[in-house]
Figure 1: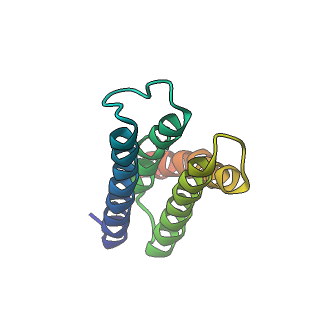
Figure 2: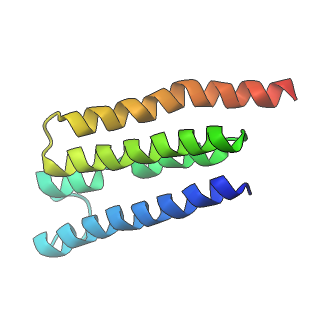
Length: 120
């Protein structure tokens, strides 16, 4: 594993743990052990989209600087998305910017990675 990938594996593991603990906090506070119980606050905590998007940055094979930039953008995007979503279910600038950063990576980074693998 590349040292830069290991950096982002560690950072994403910490962020995923923090987001999971946020869900646990709301589950305990609201006494809802499973699902969202129809509670909007818990639903927002659960719907962080972190686990669905963050692992993609870990699959890249690229130069160190490229990995640092891509990893930084995806990590910042996931933090912003979670912060925006935790405030309210309404659209917000942090949530939109977080989603945009993630989608740019998915739309550019994914095909770029595939093209590099085919070119080998």
